[in-house]
Amino acid sequence: MWKAHILTTVLVTLACGHLACSPLPSSSEVAEAQPPEIRSFQLIDEEVTVTIAQQMKLKCSTLFAGNGKEKENCERASSRLAQFLDFNYIKRSDGQGAFVFMSRRLKELLNDRAAVDFLAKLQLASEDALYLNKHFNLWEFAKENSAGREDVATERLAVLIQDGADTAAQVKYLLIAQHPQALQLAQALNTLEEALKQGKASAYPSDIKLNRIALYHYYVPRYIAQKLRASGTNADMAARLPFLFNSSYELHQIQKTENPGLPLNHRPVALTSSDDPKMRKLIDKWNVYDTLYSDLLDHLGAPLIPFNPKNQQNNLEDLYLGYAGGLQGAFGNSHANSMRLAFEEFVFKFSENPAQFIKSNNPK
Image (cartoon, rainbow, N blue to C red; front, side, top):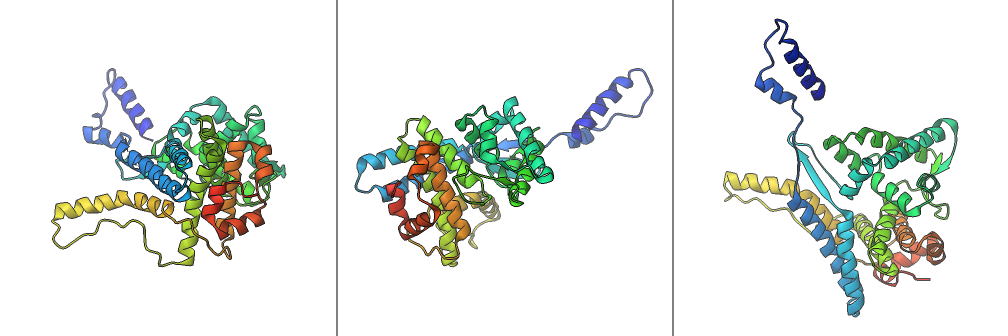
């Protein structure tokens, strides 16, 4: 809309050189037509990245307290994981804000014609599944449309489709950033999710017998594992760290269900009666930004302790997807499949001792 307004103003200006016309819009009217300013906050991005690395390193200290070399390897991989997650927070001058992970790669892929064509083909495949009953497997589709390359297929599914249509953090981020491909991505994501919900498409490699639609629990750990592997991290640690990151989030959800009164790991700055108005305003503003940080600390700070798996089906499936994704990203499908436990055995062993399970990484 604002572009059309500016174009009209330019045309009127040109026309006024030859014809009598009404006065041009005032400066305030032109200012209203300008797009809102978009700001990025390097300090927030860096703080979140450092926090992720620090919280994972604390988990490394717990897992490898008696093994200095493994602890060092784990901590090094933690720093790499945080960098690969590449968090970015933006805010517009109209007050809208959003964040996304893997931000640089998201924008790079959406500027890549092959990746944009991939989205268009995914949209068509999802429509064919919905309206023509042409069932498809998302993983096989991604491989076939990525020249058979599993690394490229994994990256596209992890980065482009990193969050579900209901929350779609990446779509909100792109809309606020006014990215030209935002609507195409939103449409492809919505259509795919509807096909998955109706059972007309399947989400994962055929050996993973789960119908859970939370794709990021599988594809993001798989992507981070393959990135860690490519950066020189050994396969065991490359599989372990994304699984640990995903598990921390799910364990927090489980622990809050078991104990709704569980205290927060991080509390907002409290106001006191002695604070002057300027200080109160500053604290209020900080706590708005701090909400994201607090939530991150609460999830990543979850202890690796046993739990009752009863009535935790969704969380257990999300845990298993992170486990499978980490293994397959680090070892490749065939080797990972020979290592991986079946879902029921995974649930039993993981819930019994999460720390030992993650430490052993291959409990068969």
